[in-house]
Image (tube, rainbow, N blue to C red; front, side, top):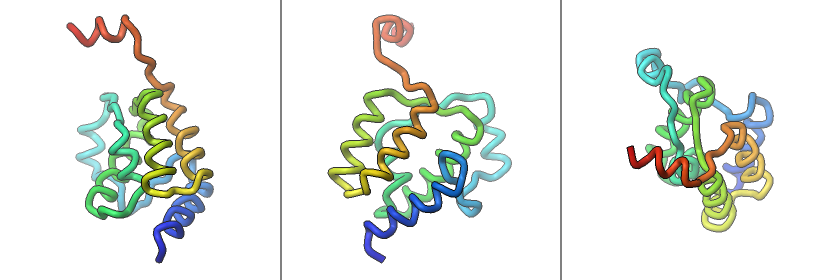
Length: 126
């Protein structure tokens, strides 16, 4: 299967599932999910790209497990910068269809992306 066809297949699955798709075979174990409960996880560009791109299957499957579990638990966090970097890398570097990248950016925006400012920087210093 051509890579572009894989993206369209993923997109078609996504349209049938709530927001971020989670394949049953890629779900975290009960123990892994319990370990993640109550925590918030910041997702960087690489993790979101690995979720989309099946080029490195081990990273792709690991990313699917974590993104799905965190999404379903409402524990994700990302930033506007990450969403911008994801868009650029998804559409220009790995050649994902624009509609797929757009749908994912819109879905990840549900996490209310973190903006960078002085209050956040001061918090990071402590």
